Amino acid sequence: MKNYLWVVLICSIACAPKFLERIEAGREDERAAVIYERGNTYFKQKDYKRAILEFEEILDRYEKSDAYEPSLYLTAFSYFKLNRFEQAASLGEKFVKEFPNSSYLTNAISLLGESYFKLAEDYKATYYLTKFYIVSDDSSSREAAFERILKLLPELSVSELEKLHRMFMVEPIDEHILYNLAQIEAREGKKEEAERDFNLLLRRFPNTDYTYEVREYVRFIGLGEATGRAGILLPLTGRFADYGRRLLDIVRIFENRKTLPFSLHVLDTRSDPIEAIVAALKLIEDIHVDFLVGPIFTIEALGVCGLASGKGIPVILPMVSDTRFESIPNIFTTQGGEEQAQAIARYGIYDLGIKKFAIVYPDIANYQRVAHVFANEVVKHNREVVAMYNFHPDSITMKYPLEEIAEKEPEALFLAMDTDMIINSAPQIAYYGMEEVTLLGISTFKNERVPRLGEKYVEGSVFATSALVDTSVFQQLSSKDYKEDEFATKFISVLWQLKNIKEYDRNVLPKIIASMLERSRIFSIYRVHDGEFVKLTEMSQ
Image 1: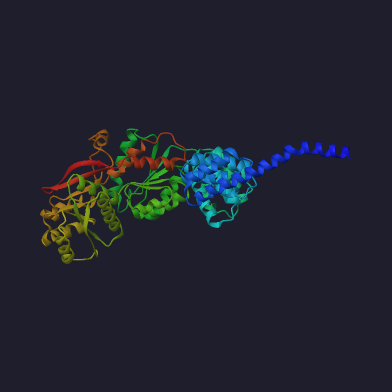
Image 2 (image 1 turned 90 degrees about the horizontal axis):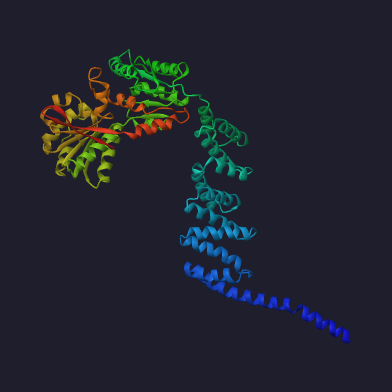
């Protein structure tokens, strides 16, 4: 019996520390639970600062308590709500490392993705958003994460995309990772890697939404080395021959002076849209030009642009200002009526001091766009458009609308219309009470028929034209070889700007051309004075 009591006594002494630890742990859980409830109450009330104070006491003192796990997540979430994204990301990383099986894990991964997105850490943001997209069951949240991922992928480097590809290659999301990886490789001139990854994309995802883009890139990176040749399409025979021959003289000047870092190869469109396509095909397939300049008229340009775009050859349209051409891949236009309208609006506002404008334009799509661009520019600069009137192109009289416009007392009237319409409209504008109103316009004013037939009614009109080449360029072309001609200004501008294309790869040529054309946009401002066009100034956009 004594031995038994000794055994019990010894066991009690040995087990006492563990028993006391359990008691103390229970007390800690109770204290932590009380603090957690206070913090959670603040959290629900969106008082995130006070919630953090309570939760951080648990993180500092009660790491082994049951309240520690939810406190860690809610602290990270509270920091996110307070826009303290670095702390949110740091605690989020700690959470996913310490609690990989937590019921909060999916939310913590989403929190990390959004935090890194706010911090502009694109790779980490993409990584966690992708993990969230894969594990989440919430369709709306997955869709939002997916949209973020698609925006972020093009911003990543090749090495970052390669890491994501290795981590998520068994997931459907790898379709988008692979596409962006191959696309960036192609842009950086890594042809073998790009072709490998494009082909892998098509093999693994035969029904990919990127089928067209992939085939375009595979074809594009297989174009071969640059040849240093440019094709020029001009109407040297047929009804437009006079225009084409004048421009051919300019091409010869550039060639004779060796102004450009590549050779120019001119073919005749014969003033015919089908012959223009035939000529373009010869330049592309037989002469192997890197890009085309021309045709100079829309009717010839339509087919040529379709052909060249399909073969991945950039086209610069020096005379075509219809911005719809720019929706075709690799097709570039110079500025036209819309840009001129913006220029003359700014000149009218800041140089002429006009505050109230009226606008008249015909029911023709091109002039409608010009009129609305002018109106938007006026409003953007905090001036007033008091009236806008559109008319049928065959209208003979504009009595009633012009009388209504006159009642609004505009200081200037913008005419978005062709030359003949200007000549017909100007006398009516004066007759119906606006002879003192300044007429504003675009390059359709710069026709000798306007002052000759419009007479006193167009006197004082101010308008903008494209002047993409400044006067120093004409001096360099030499007065003997070339006399300044308004029609050829855009053509000369394109050729002059092309001298900036030095060394290039064909896969980056479209970007170079786009940047080149955007770099210099210059306009001439003219006034009709004593029946002559007087140049007032040049202005840049």
